[in-house]
Length: 408
Image (cartoon, rainbow, N blue to C red; front, side, top):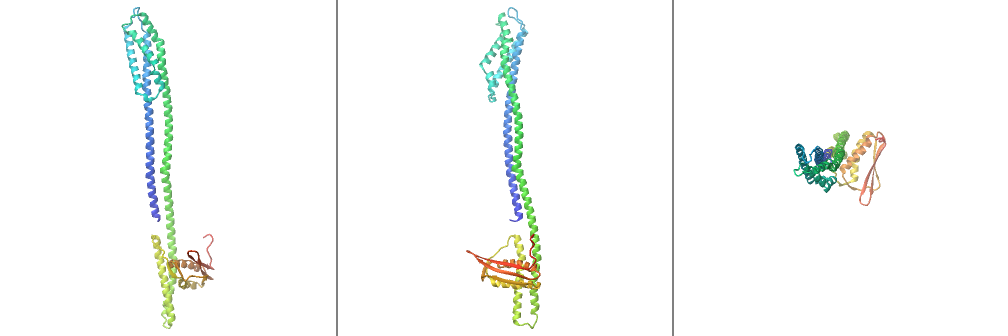
């Protein structure tokens, strides 16, 4: 895959990851917010109900105390008569207390979801109802026209200001205390919920970072590394192309020199027919080699476009080696070194491979050996190894040159 296609694939993968993880993160955030919103609404509704009950209980407790205080101001004569203003005030307090009691009963019916058995067991008990009804009856008797007994008036006033007030106020105070403890627990829960909410949002941030931003960061790093590698590969390919063109220009001069030399040689009218035939053959061989070098230049373009192919075919190995020797030996002769070809063991007459690519490889390897050898010789040993299914053709090149440094 080309660097450009790899970069496009990484970009597509990054886009898909971003969309997928963004949708997952958004769904997670929306779901968490919905859950916390519902829980918060539940807490608010419970607290609103508690505040309403607290208000009703507080009003009821206030009215009970006001009725008791009003009864203490109740100055009746021996016939049970009292100040009309006190009677009207008492009647008003009793009616208000009955209204608040009805509000309390309504709250108990409408707010079963509050789930406060302590409050319900107190305000909805027979004991509370009995004491409340008795307290209200005693208060009503003070302004009732049927009450003509001085003793009954004194008993009612005494009950309202002492035992009745104490018993009913104690029950209402107990409910109020319970509600206050509930409110304290509510605010404690609210504070804990805030802490939990902060922790959840931190967790959400970490999840979003892990699922969205971290993959994007890693993908960006991979893309950056891939682009850097692609740039290095492109620079390396550019250098290789430059080196190839520099080397191929030298390789082109070798067959051109042979062609021009023998062309000048053919201009001599005194040469015999055998020498002419040999010169024409050498010119033909070098022309084919020059054509192969031109094909190598074209192969570079094929490699870059991904259209480079290798074709296997049968060819005569001894003839191939003789042609290759006659071509490469010109370069060795120019440098004044000896080029030797040796066979090790049995060499098959026909082999199957790509002769064009094999010639390119041998020209590069043997050509470099000649290039870096200033004196002595260059030897290429050809050997063949047969295994169960196929054979291996080996070429070993030795020279007396400077060699390759260990650091390279």
